[in-house]
Structure formats: C-alpha cells, structure tokens
Length: 205
Image (tube, rainbow, N blue to C red):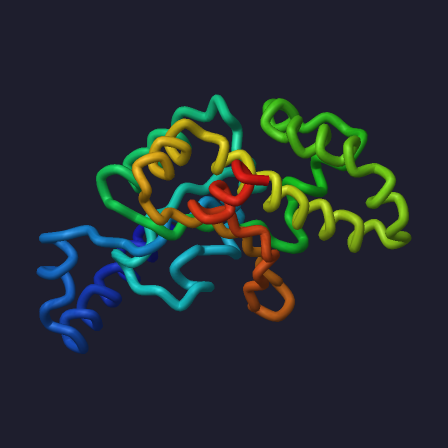
C-alpha cells in the first residue's frame, strides 16, 4: 500500500513538472492562500479538490465533524496564523451531508474519545430539539444538524479573541458557512457570514 502511494506521488510529480515546469519552484518560495478552511476530516471532503483550488490556495484545518471548540489549541493556532501571519481574509467553516461525526453524536451507543469531542453537537441538538424533531426522516434530521453545526462553528470562530482583535483593527475578515453534498459534489452557502460590517451593525443594534 505504501509503495503504491509513493509510486503515485512520483507519477504526480512528473506530470506536474511536465505540464507546469515552474509549479514546485513557485510553491516552495511562498505561501499566499486566500482561504482558511475549517472542515471535516472525512476523506471524501478534501478542501482544495471540492473547491476547485490548487495547492497553496487554501490553508486547511480539519477535525471530526468540523467542530469549533473554544479550547482547541490546534484550531486556534492555525486560525491565528491564518489571520495574522498569512493575512487571510476569507475563513470558511464547511460541513457535509452524510457526516459520520454527526451520526455518531445522535446515536445512543459509545464511541470512545469521539464522544467527548462531539459533545458540542449533542448540546446543539438538545437546544434545537423542537426544530429537529419536526423533521420526520432521520437522515434529513442529521443533515439539518450538520447545517446547524456549521452555523454554530461560524459563530464560535467569530467569538474568538483572534477575530475580535482583527475586527477592532479594521481588518475585513469574513467568516462563511458552507455545506457540501456528497451525493452531488456541490457546495452550498448557508448564508450565515459574519464580518466587520455585521459585527459593527450588531454593536449599533
């Protein structure tokens, strides 16, 4: 298996050299991505592939069910680096339909350490129980919970001191929420974007 992976890498590298001779030299000298992507670790949802982006165009942090934990130092360190060092101004929280993490959070069976990680989703499901219970099909209910988890993630990112300080400096950072469909390959905008403008409006409201 590993030898096959390495052979594929050699073939990919050779093809890149053939079709775009300066590709690796360009990547080696700079990293200037336009997007910071907080996504699910699911192998079917690679950020640059589904967004049609090339290497170097998206800075990525992934975890089970794209949960934004306020105590996740890995995510917070990546977020800080994205905003302050890479000067990224477009942040995306992206979930997906058919998410195994969402399913696990709604099952009454043990999942080991994952249960601790997924606790925010269970709390979210309890808060939105009335809305979710009105959806008759369990998969549709889980897909709606996946959407709500993204919206919650956008809000949590916006509440970090990292984003608050950036907005106080007047930096036009935006946090978007997207959901990906495994069955059709399409990204959908959940229209929950938070930005310097929306924060300013909230202060005046």
